[in-house]
Image (cartoon, rainbow, N blue to C red):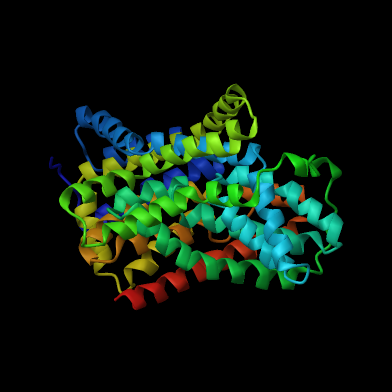
Length: 447
């Protein structure tokens, strides 16, 4: 499909105009993201002089292609996370880690809790779920609550931005032609040191911040006798990680015949991994411990309602991406970006960071940036798995007053705007910066 496309400089102007219109609609006009993406897609198509009868076809194709491969994966991920939350597995994991590390290393334990619990849980669910834990540790330890909250949220943010099956990295992986399992392994390698710096180390600098958290958010906790065992909680919550990473590593083993490789590829498919994880969780954390299947399924319905808005954002990003592809932008943009004197990974990070600061949403920033740098991945030869991490790091940069996470952190812990900027915003900035630094280091080690 070929259209009359403007020269490269004109294409760049059109792309910037489309992205700017998206930013204005979402950040200033408060337009619902799906509607904003559709309007920006039509606007870009008209500027690219695409035939009118092809515009709607491209939008529908982009939405279908994007959602088709992700809807089941993200839905299963939401159900899995809900089971982990409702069963008390998350609280058990945190209790074991805090007990193992002791009071002196409590910030480290909380950071690992946010990171591990954040793998199966979507961000907002993880945030709300972990707040009662922070309040409980605050009451027991007497430590400043911001000092305790920052490590948890650093670990949670990194899992959200770097690791499949979270929405943004899971959607970007097929866009770049990356491998879900390998991206997860690289994400763990990059994410753990990033979490330690942005979490426990940075938390030491915010001990002095005074907070006045409302008692409203000190939610009732699950009683200890109703919690699963430590082995059950850890093994079930981390099962998707074990399966994805294990099948990916087995795929590189040369001792298998063709049939075995087909089986490994099937079992390593992210949808199959999440389906197996859900079934195992239903048994080990649910019916095997006396919970009713009907209650578990009711919770699953709530989880699906929580994921619906994210799916719509992903659908809208797919529409804009397809307009760029069918409008001929990708080829010309790839050549243009390739000639810029900026390394591809840094460029992907920078574009995602700019959109994140402008829009507030990490998911929207990651998906929009991915649509812009996809041609760069193809023409530059950069490792697509590392580009997923670079864009993910950029999408977490410097959350501020246009991000719901900023206000959740402020209100839950009773902070002023100034102190929220000093703690939350800087923490997110460190996540983005050191996420890129460790991605670049990993790139050098792999080359």
